[in-house]
Image (cartoon, rainbow, N blue to C red; front, side):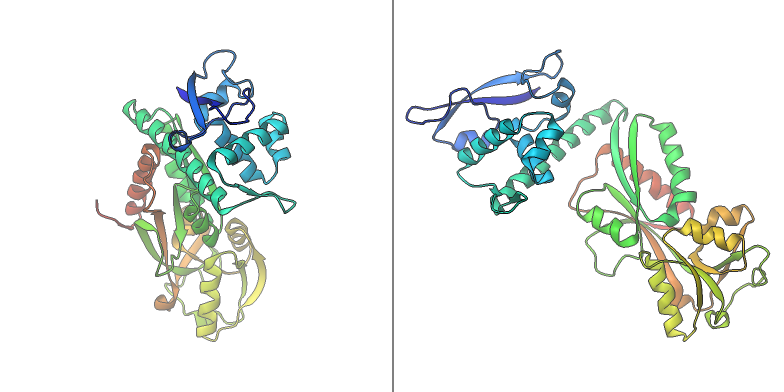
Length: 365
């Protein structure tokens, strides 16, 4: 049951008796100007207790009403856009936020700019609402763990190199075992995946080349050197290893600079004084591999990023002799400050076990 508050002013105040506002319990305890009576919203009846909230939303959104309105305005930067998204009148949102600011005795928005921006107090209230929502979701999923992980959601971020062979295989296996758990996958660049995890947009991530100093918890790490990737029929495909210097002026198809792999390739070329003839540059590894598969162009990838094509007899991976310069790693990471939900923890265990099968070093415990 979601608990809402109906506020009525104490004697000596001049607020409209018909106005309702929903606030956290601690606000009620600390206010000298408000007394409260509570009413329950079960979210089950055909007509929700509050006319502005559909019963499905009421069941899912356990934030107090005023905080729900406040959060929507904070995220959209506009009362009008928030009203459109919530399908209510802008005046209803303005009234609730005004009452919330009065009750908290501080301004939550800076209204001088064209776009509403949060004050320092507003940032604090937004953080509180985010924690409240996340804590409720954690509790809900913990309860579902008792019934065998029949539902839940996990947000995963990954660099592209792990998608076609690793992620697709283990997500299919996970879905077969836990069909009620929804997994949302974001495939982004190395830097973006770290930012999304750090900002709380992801539950776990597969990241390439972590910096030496980082805030993440590493659950498993797969170390593999960069290899020369060529088509099976390429003249270099039969080589057991090759020096990067031997590839001077070769025509290459490379990932663009959104990939950390590109920075590594450029670094090796610079240190070995080996110029490459960049013929194709792309923001997708699939394109780079496809071009190499159908031509005599070269590319450079860790072996795991081309496992499917190698297994299918389409590409060959030739180790580079400059192993000290070409070392790469892929890491399975979370934020240590956030406890994974039961569903996220189960997927984490699945990925961790899968990576160890490919030779990854797993965190103990």
